[in-house]
Picture 1 (cartoon, rainbow, N blue to C red):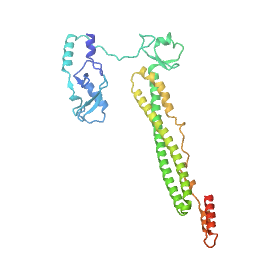
Picture 2 (picture 1 turned 180 degrees about the horizontal axis):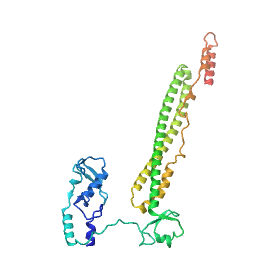
Picture 3 (picture 1 turned 180 degrees about the vertical axis):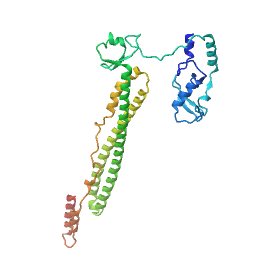
Length: 333
């Protein structure tokens, strides 16, 4: 009979089912009111009719197995009533009118060293949850301890603060990535502008200067690719950092949903250290101001223009003078 009583207890209100409904397809049961409370909590923005019946559908998770339940426009009131369970409850109540319904307690982790002792304190020295006997007689008798709920509240606050810091840090990293993207575009634009100017200048020097024009263009291309490779590599590092902290953030949020204090504290401390580490971007390089500038490739051809003005066909030495002037132009470039 004790086993039967446990099967008739709602996992939400911990009392015997009242108008039990079947949560398809996992086949677990809930009181219809408890199912509606869970549904309302999971769908706070859905409109309600008569203060309780949700009419726009929605979804929530079964509290027994975490299976996702999708409801139609009738909401919880569209779930099938479990008449078999209702009949069993009626017969049970008729045969046990004087017997109180046992209280169902949630499982609590037990101490590994003392199997009959629940974990109810936290060892500050060792940063682990433990039991009272471990403090009195066991490995933690010389350690500083504190009530489990005090440390639970403190570390949950710390974890919340770290999550907030990490979210803010991720926003800053995303802003840096956007700046890096803009720097890439500025480098491309400035490189195209400077190459155009160089090409326009070289076009006036005709065939004799084509070789030098190609050489200078290649120099710009080389620095452009060097800078772009650096910026892209830096952007990749920031993206990898952001991806890692996003996963860490997801883990932290999932940890915050843990309601069991001991289980939470077993993972909170190392997670806090990782979160603090995730906010540090000092190991990532920063782009220096004006890094995208390509103005140092701007060429001055005043001397070359003066040399070109000296080319003359007035005497027999014109051909030699042209060759000599051309050689001087190439040297000056």
